[in-house]
Image (cartoon, rainbow, N blue to C red):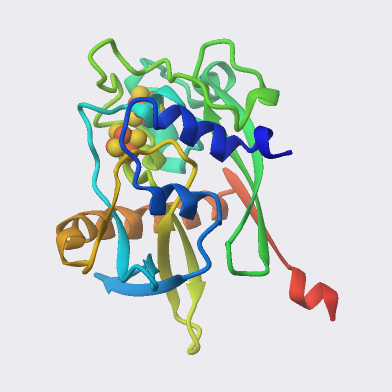
Length: 244
Ligand code: SF4
Ligand code: SF4
């Protein structure tokens, strides 16, 4: 079912407007057999940067906004943290949070699996509607976000959802060998972002890693609070332990 791969479809659409290096294209489709996980820790966040060992190149990223706003043109879902709900309800003029949740949000439920891992995570969150009449069955389908204006700017900025600040990083918290929580981040390879490039060292991306480490760390703490206060639910299933 090659033609129905949503990542390939997204990439093929992306390459009509942007130059995507062939190595980056193949990485998105899982076609590189030489990918190594380079872990770079910055301010308490462990970044998993793909290293293409036969090419001797790292896959790095920088945002091309304002020339690009593809992530807002093709937004899959906008899960809200506890503080996102407070901030955006106020921004949209709601006095009552329950009225905001009833009018402006849907429930999203989705699964994530780390590319090399055996853990499947099922997440359920309150998500901001990307269009006024969004239905729950549209969750995960790319849609142009209603908050994107004609100039490519976000009308919620700086009060946009935490996930918008983080894209294209995905992040999660894991305990290290001593049981201490560690925040991890990797790229979401959805095929929607033209900002990936290749370099023979991570150096050129260090300012971005510095900038994002604070946002990623704080977002993970906020998501823990969101789950603790039952505004969202996260379940982990370890496929290895089930197979034993
Ligand atoms: S798609 Fe990528 S490059 Fe474009 S605005 Fe979003 S994060 Fe930046
Ligand atoms: S809320 Fe703003 S930043 Fe987020 S997808 Fe919509 S337009 Fe883009």
